[in-house]
Amino acid sequence: MNIYVGNLNYKVQEEDVKDVFETYGDVTSVKLISDKITGRAKGFGFVEMSNDQEALDAIENLDGHQLMEREMRVNQAKPRDNS
Image 1 (cartoon, helix red, strand yellow):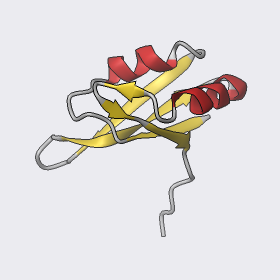
Image 2 (cartoon, rainbow, N blue to C red; image 1 turned 180 degrees about the horizontal axis):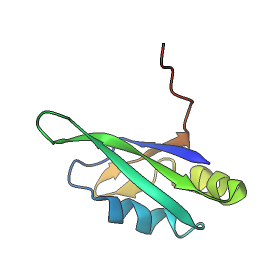
Image 3 (cartoon, rainbow, N blue to C red; image 1 turned 30 degrees about the horizontal axis):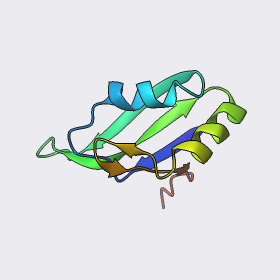
Image 4 (cartoon, rainbow, N blue to C red; image 1 turned 60 degrees about the horizontal axis):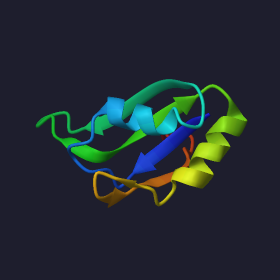
């Protein structure tokens, strides 16, 4: 399951996010989004977890969780609209 993670501190690294989500199960990937021109973090990203139940547990427990003094927003990612 693909999970959206928002309201991240700009100093958060992919490894930090992975460590938090691994508490709930196997994390297959973490991708934090950055500005293509400046390279600066945009404050959100995506976590992919292989087990849907573990992903749902992570969403339920981590939405509002403090990470580096910011409350994460965590929910199931919506499919990208390419139109």
